[in-house]
Every structure is written in structure tokens, then in C-alpha cells.
Image 1 (tube, rainbow, N blue to C red):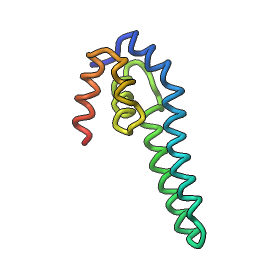
Image 2: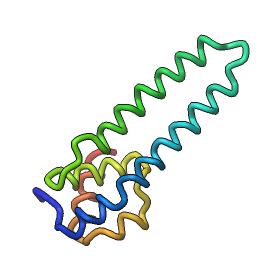
Image 3: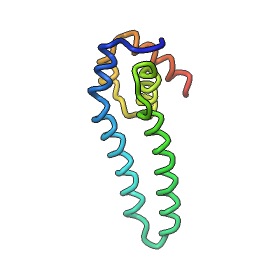
Image 4: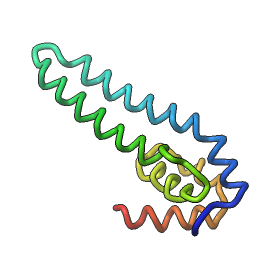
Length: 109
């Protein structure tokens, strides 16, 4: 599948900001957990924070950077793989897109 339908592209475009906010909120929750338990292990916590931010920045880039209709299926699969896109949200897309996403996700496990 080279690109998604216009309807699926519009659906993804309408979900993008809420998906990005959700992904970022999850990252902030992880950061807060590490930060709140840092007493007496500040350097270890700092290293854990750096690791989380670096890893999650790569995931955010994979999911959202250079988002365009021609790579939307790959981005939707990344959103699903990283747990940002729910099954209910995926069901909003056409069956063709859902099948392509399932195929891509099956190769990532």
C-alpha cells in the first residue's frame, strides 16, 4: 500500500494532535516517576531520565516526524506498536488500512 485513502488521511490528521499529546503525557508520567524517587540516587535517576528521553524521542520521531499521506500506514503501524493508537481508534480506519497496519505490526514483534 503506497498511501492511504483520503478519508483515512483526514482521520489520521484529525487524531494527530491528541495522539501526540497522549504519547507525551505518558512520557511525562514516566519522567515524574523517576524524578519522584531520585532522593539519594540522583545520578542514577539522571541517567534513567536521559535514557527514557532519548528512547522516547526516537519513538516520537518514528510516529510523527515527516508525517504525510504516502507514509501514513507506516506511521499508523508505529503508533499502534508503541501503544499510542488504541484498537478503537484503529477501527476508525478503512479495513484496507487496518490490514496493512496489522501486517506491518506482525513483522515488528
